[in-house]
Image (tube, rainbow, N blue to C red; front, side):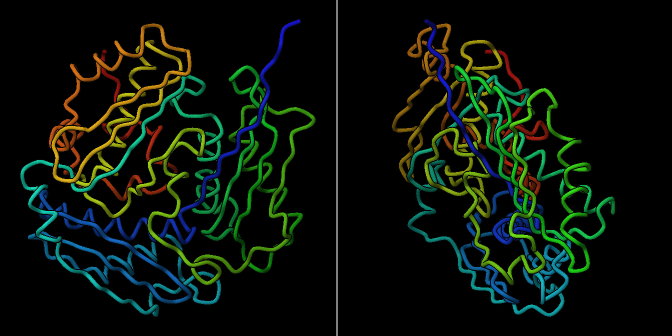
Length: 372
């Protein structure tokens, strides 16, 4: 008798009004503003939002002159933070800025092309989705993005900017088999009833995004299961830069080294090496060398070359994994400076990465196809 491998995987995404994502966007908008004036800017900025106050702290070494308060208020306005009772008011919120310069001890190693930090990074790709991402996080991002679209277009006019999406997929023999559960919590104005909201999200968000053949009679839909979500944003929950690292990457379907992305320039290998490893893993799969691929690298602060490279193709590789590592080393410059130049990471593109995942979106250099 044939045995079937059956399991469930869950991933979440959040909308751009989620306070953690607002914090990420502020940090990356400051980074972009510095890079627009000085491509060699060194930036490591953290943001915290709580109630009606924004705190920005970190290190910036740059020839750029940046109005950080103005960036903060414009970003808050952009994401719909216009009411101190339900999210935050960009016009009246308190702003605390505590910025210093990068430590000279770190700069010594970075100036010579070395890594701006130590740590481990992962890259992952799978052929189970067109974007070479795990299906649960790919679908969760598409639903979260659609939730934002119907809010901005006025198609669902009572929606507000905070929200979460959670998707559970049933796998059979390591392939997505069916959608088991979709959970959406969407912030809304006080004057809408739950039945209307549930109907609108089901018809105008879920039905427009999900693959119909992945839904069956047992698929469960939960829409605002608490019954009310009027107060949200930074009033309901403190937001911090780097607190959605699983949303940013592979939705928990692959390993994570622990380093956040937002607010960091590309000399920080937490960001640049993770982008490079996604690029390599995606192209290993896209070139047919494996159906799934996870790569780990480690770096030492101030050192040029990675300290280690590990690859796991989960038995799907068509050539030995040792040979794939050899190909990687021959084809790609894995030094921090080489990664920055290859992926063009001195450009002010980082605020675009903040929402709906850093991976699986073809607008970025690390998602480009190359022949291996």
